[in-house]
Image 1 (cartoon, rainbow, N blue to C red):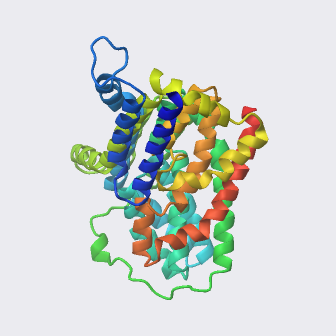
Image 2 (tube, rainbow, N blue to C red; image 1 turned 180 degrees about the vertical axis):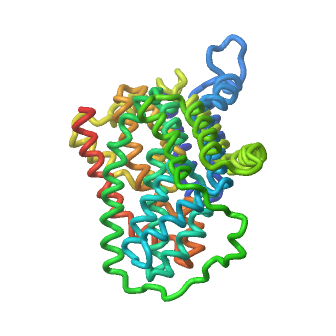
Image 3 (cartoon, rainbow, N blue to C red; image 1 turned 45 degrees about the vertical axis):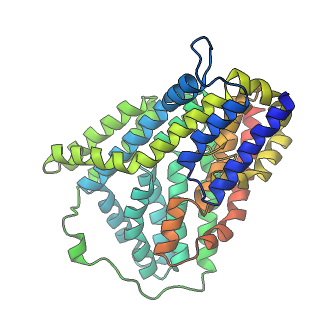
Length: 427
């Protein structure tokens, strides 16, 4: 009976992946439906006052709140990002970077890579990508970089920034039962490989770029009126919450609130109350999609960790757990493309359930976290279904699959390098 149930559960996984890949069903609906379907197949009662675990109480109700820390981190990050934008920190940093780089294409690309990585570590999401991209891409193209290379700078900086984004780190902590100080202490392991590979990729792409643009429609002065410059000291604002969490182990919510207060003090905007309240509403709007996704992830985690599902899948999953550094690197390296299309190695997709099962079956949670974070680096740049990839391709008038083709082998190499480094730590 358990064998038949296991086959049905894996079929549900596969059908869910196909539906998400073909965009027949959005992820925010696919995950809750999958969670309920798997629980039902495993024999979890829908509602039973005498049962210890039910679909209504544990999968739907408790699952919706399972990722509360991650949801809080994402929302506060979005709020902080809107504050940075409204007071002028974001625009000023980009202007200063453009002035520093001058009209040199290589220098412009690297300066923007650094500055935008810092911005995305403070606040990520499609809204921030669009805000930053509409400013820096025309500037880079005007210096002679091709549209696709300019778009890659934005994608690379987003991938690097998200590696250290506090909301993203909170998701890994919630899903794998790790404390925030543990998650942050290993960020350098997943961060260094992607930073080095992205830096090398940019150098190679720019040196070999034969399709440089000669002009681009730049925003007019009238379009930029109302966006004020802030004093130089205020430009440290995006780093304040990150430093407080990484260096002083401060909780995310407190660190972000301190970051907002420090930003207001350093930038001294007019009508500070309106700035903060407006940023709160707009930040909630920007984060709403990710928050809905985390609700589905929480339901999926509750399902796969239920006694009934664990009993069915643990024997199968246990056999797949790497037992040596070599198998660890090979399994998660070769399968890293499964992180795209919200696949089974994407923490913001089916990977949340897979990682929880791996840990429940005996895998070191730090090893599982590092493996999925390495694979997520590939997903952040190469996934053609990412909303920011779609926007960048549309803005640069480039086929979204061109970004995947140009970067996937490079990011796969980054993943293998990161996994090799991680293997020395966790084995």
